[in-house]
Length: 117
Image (cartoon, rainbow, N blue to C red; front, side):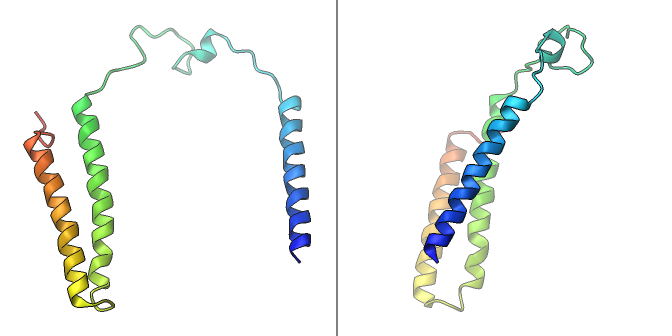
């Protein structure tokens, strides 16, 4: 049984490697020129830089949003597990988790990371 699976896996990987090598060798080679390397598809040279700088403050706020979004996804199952676990254990775990979140929020607030301007 395991021998059969191992043989099938080996054959599959071998065929996949052969197909990848064939597509690499048989693929149409494209010639890269100035128009194809430009950031715009129409082919004209841009007057301004294609790389527009963005605010670092916006980046930090986006990262903070992602962190709090993950924290919310960890908080939501807590409500459904209250009936499945010991109440004291659930309470200690929830309070510890919320305390860590509140300390992180206070730190971000004290570092003025939550201000827009």
